Length: 185
Image (cartoon, rainbow, N blue to C red; front, side, top):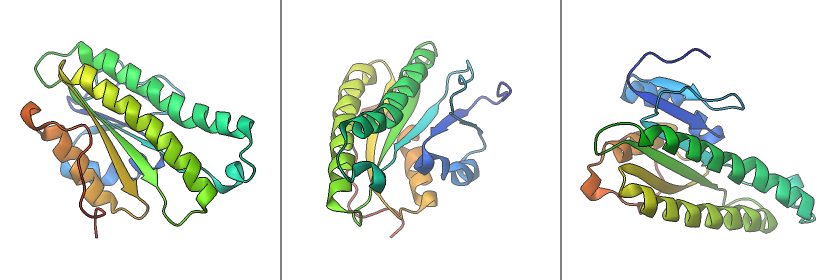
């Protein structure tokens, strides 16, 4: 993919985040870059939306430690890698608000209990990490938000919320906004 030429760059990774593409483009004309295994552009993103996906049913049937490790590596470590890359680029930008990283934590209440155990455990670990990063980088102008979402959340409403979080003044930043109802309901 070629280097984006627009001034506003958004990175997306994970199935939930990628579903927001059209909605984000409708809210604000911007360059969307889908993160995969290739390196991202060297231009600092203003908004990064990452999502961790619920554990797959076949992965959890026996709670196999090798499968659990593979799930952690595929989900959490890859997400952490993208966050580190984004922070490195955001740090170099000028201004008080250098960028926003939104981590969507997918929850699926209708999955078998054993699947919920891994998903909730992974989400708890990601939540703790995001809270620590938010404390460290918030005072340096990088807004980090952890946002739990439920299956069936309206992509338009979620994209709008991500954009609103990105546009917030620094004085109203919150690490984990409290949603009173599922988005789009």
